[in-house]
Length: 103
Image (cartoon, one colour):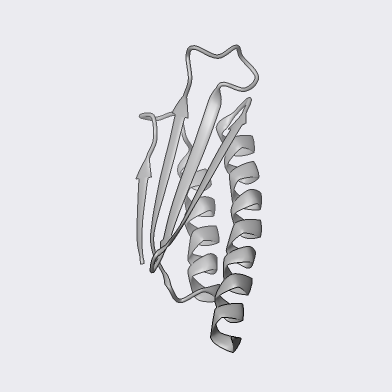
């Protein structure tokens, strides 16, 4: 499993990056087909304060790609919202893959 992070220099705490990494690793244990994750965290200066912190997460699972985009007032809230949405998408992917196997 390959996990890549792109974050603004010294703006995202290492503790938050570790939390995100651990959550993604947990998803890879649920679905062995997940091979890559990319996490991009950034600040959007063109949007008013309150929803200008962005967390994008891409997962690749052998032909299936998942993209989650969240906006919040800080990096922690944005990441937690993205992880919550990602958890739902991974469960949907697992269900879809198990239906293909049983069909």
